[in-house]
Length: 202
Image (cartoon, rainbow, N blue to C red; front, side, top):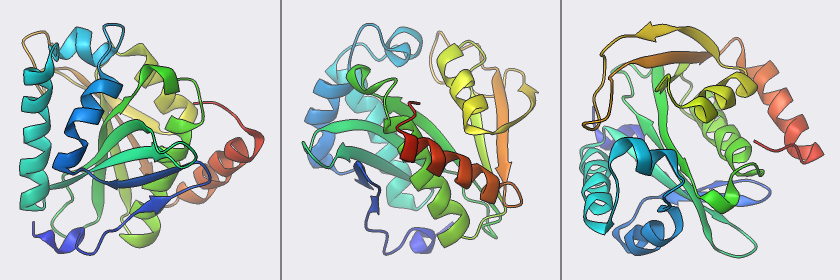
């Protein structure tokens, strides 16, 4: 996979947030904003201090430099504060599918418009700009909040891959696989736009 998939990418902009590619200049602010002992990522992935956090980010930078992924940092437009980060993973060679993964929302922005709006922006880019046929999500079965968010999003649960991906010593490796296909995107888009217009959370 070459950089051409994401070449020229600039920004995703919604009513309340804008999403730009991860930059080394974001690292310190991301750490200060995202790190919390109540966050699922901290408890289950062993990201406990600045060193482990930066080590995690190094993986995102490496994939981004190879064109294998694109990590986006979301900021609230009004305040300029970081709200979250999320990643496009594993675009297929013929670009028929892509994965959206590793969404980390700061504690103070959970149960707000942030997750809904960033998923809307990323799905819209995937289906309408990249023209993919399928968007995938893989979620740890133990992450109740993320699994519930997938269902609210309208993603289809296809099953569980057992011992499929290990990201830390605490990781059991199982993943619930969800998808949205291009045929479903118009109805998913309409539902997300309605929720954003109504101020619906998550």
